[in-house]
Length: 76
Image (cartoon, rainbow, N blue to C red; front, side):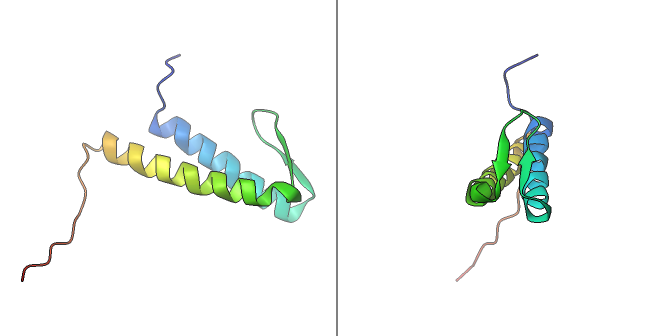
């Protein structure tokens, strides 16, 4: 297995954190796929993880699609 982070793997991590957020709101704790136990006290850490992995997914998705993006130009 390559050590390179792919969009698919980053998406898995994002989904882990989203599931953790949902799990904690429904119960008192949640265990990530890597075995890490999280509780309501970890909610800000989880939300930071969600933000981080969303950004990584966005960057990797852009790279995989050839870096094509849309930009707004203002002509004066």
